[in-house]
Image (tube, rainbow, N blue to C red; front, side):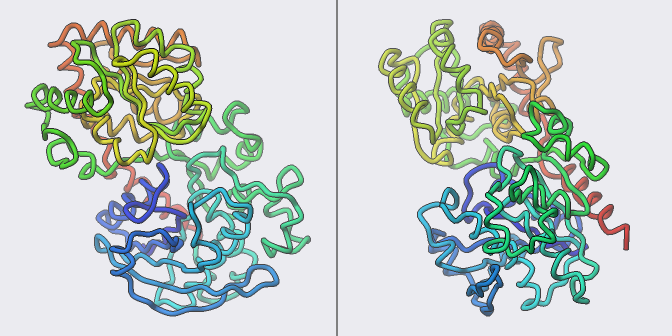
Length: 474
């Protein structure tokens, strides 16, 4: 099975969140499971020089972007036994960030088309092209509209993964011909509610579609989570499935993590956690205390449940808990956390900046890990936190529902609440603190969480099965 995996980001090269984590760790797992993997990415200008130095120039060609012909340089790099292709166009990709520009519609129309054009210039005809989120979503549509008549492309199948339906790539209809390069007669392929919707085009055009957890695959058929596409998705639910993401268990391994104060495993959990908690308190300026530390690693974004935290952060730290938050984005939240830190010095602290710089220290140094999300398609942070013995406190939505079972029955791995309610979140935190006071019971719970297996072994098999389903129509 030859698979071309297309993404707008992937660790360790460049990443902003869970898409980058998945695109960096799933292809090696699929390769280990028997697939022949190739990954294709944009070549952003700020990629580290150490990676650029390892790249080999392959060729260059032009990519049609509506009426324009745009330069595309092709570079190759081998990492973890997989070929990575990087597509270079400095006009589109030499920017101060990956996303958020006025011409993102054109940038990723170029990238989607360039994914297909690359196949003319390399010795690869994949069985499946696996696209991810709206930045690659036009590739399945372009394949069906403009490449199917070419023998090399005639039998290629497509898979599309929805990582977060909030982000669909929605643009005005005026870009259809001048930017996207799709004629008015084919507007229906990418049209939804009168505008161009890249994600809708991918769902329409792909052979198989998946969301990044089983619960989220069901949720997006409902108006609350469906972001306007729920009816369209219901009509096509026969090709929709949910596959829970995994994490790279080598990267998130407290026994070998050089970035934390002390390595530890299940057996020496208490000693390692004590050292890491001490380091975390020093970094965040928290007082030495016998109280538990609640950690968060998050984007400062409404759907992460931060409005609940705004309502209850004072109550949480007044209930005998400390908080250490690492996050980025959202001036409103940064201002609130700064004011709360000034009022609750030594009990509450937030650090703003790239999440990767502090995330492992928060996982290792916190006793509990809070995710009060309004929506959470999969969530990887709760999986990573459990690896480090930080017990999750989560709202039951998306992948959080699929990975966390409340310990009230004596067999779970965390604390949960159902309603999107600040009071219910506070009650879950208080239940966690109460158990923390019984240290033998708490340590048993933390070890149980550490033993949960959220590696890529099972998800990789499910993705391979999805690919096989896609090619069955041959």
